[in-house]
Image 1 (cartoon, rainbow, N blue to C red):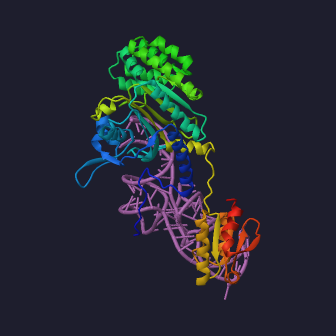
Image 2: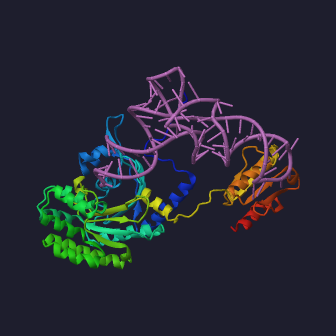
Image 3: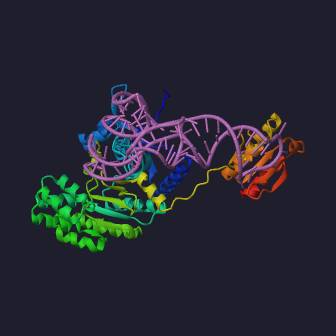
Length: 437
RNA sequence: GCCGGGGUGGUGUAGCCUGGUCAGCACAGGGGACUGUGGAUCCCCUAGCCCGGGUUCAAAUCCCGGCCCCGGCCCCA
C-alpha cells in the first residue's frame, strides 16, 4: 500500500498564478496601510491558550487549534491578531509614544467547518491603533479600512457602522437580561424575513412593545444623515446621546477623509460579543458567492487592561483576504499575471562547451535584471522550442557549436520566427533593447 | 458539533441507477519518427476507481463507517 499524505482539512495549496494575484492584493493593501503611517509587526504563530481564553472566555477554546507542547505548555495557533498585538503592547510598548499604529498581514487558524469563504487557515490584513479614545482615531481607522478596499480596485461595497453602547443601552431599555442573545438575533436580521424575525423575537420573550422597538432599531440603517435623527428619537439616556454625537462627528470626519460615499449606519451590527466597546463596523460587497462580511473592526477600550496593562483605548480592523480575493476575482478586478521567463536560453546538443556557454549567457542576462531561464533537461532543440512556444516565451537564445566557433549566438523572436546572429558579448545589450529595458 | 450533495490517472470526465468485457475518452507530462530550428501529424510510455469493512461466485457500481471536498446551520473572538 502506497503511503499518501493529503492536505489537512480546511487548508489549501496556493499555486504560482494564485500566489501572484494574492501578492498583488497584499501589496496594494500594504502600501495603503503604510501611507497612513501604520507600521508592520509580526507576532508568533502560536501563543499561550490562556491569552485567548482571557479575552473571550472558555467558549472560544473549542474553535482554537489548541495543543500541549513537549514542555507541557497549553498553546494555540492564533485565531486572529488582536490578542497577540495587545499582548505585545502590554509587554513592551506601554511607554511608547502614543498612538501606536501597527499593521499585519498574516495567517490565522480557527477550528471550524469550512464553507464558502471560510477555511481553517486563512489570511487577514489588519491594523490596530492603540492609545487614543478620540473619534479621530475611529475615523482614521475606518477611512483606512475603506481606502484599503479601494486600493484593490473594489468600489462596490459599503462600510456599515454600528455602536455597541447603543445596543447595550437598547437591551437595558427592553429589560432584557440575555443581552448577548438579543444582539445575536439582531445581528442576524438580514438573514431572516420580517415574519421570521418577529417570530424569533417573540420566542425570545419580547412583548409586542419590545418587538416594535427592535423593529424601529433595525430601521436605523442607511445613510447617516437620514437615519441618525431616528436614533436620537429612540435613545434618550445621556450615555446613548453621547455615542450618537460621536457617530455624528465620526461621519463628519469621514466626509473630510473623502470616503462618505461608502459609509452607512447600521445600528443592528454587533460584530461578535467579546471585546468591542463602542463603534463597530464591517464591510459588505454584493456578490453571488455567498460571502457576507469581507472585513470588520471596532473600538476595544478594555482589552489592554484585561491583559494586565494600564487602561488603554484601542481601535482596529481586519480584512479577510479569503473573502476579498474571491470577490475581486469574480468581478474580474485582479490583473492577469504572466509567469514565464522573458528569455529562454537553449544549448544545442550536449557538448560541454555549448552547455557552459549557455549558462554564461543566461547568467549575464540574469545579472542584467532579465528574467531568464536555461534549458536543463537535455531535450532536443525541437522539443525545447516547443516548450518555449507553449509557455509563451517571447525570446529564445540558441547557443550552438557552429555559432560559437564564430563567437556568436542566435536570438530568435518566438512570435515572428525571425532569427538573428549576434556577438556573444553583445547578447545582453541586444536583449535589453528588445525587451525595452 | 449538526445537515445536504459529492470523491474515477496530474487536470477534466464516461461508466454507477439496472454488479460481470483487460475502467473508456480528452488534455497535460516523458520518449521516438526528425542527432541545429517550435506550436502540425503519427507511434509508444507514464499514470486512476479516497480509505476500511460488509453483501455477492463476482463491487468503481449495492450497504455501513471513516477521511476529504463543496455548500448550509451553529459560531465567527
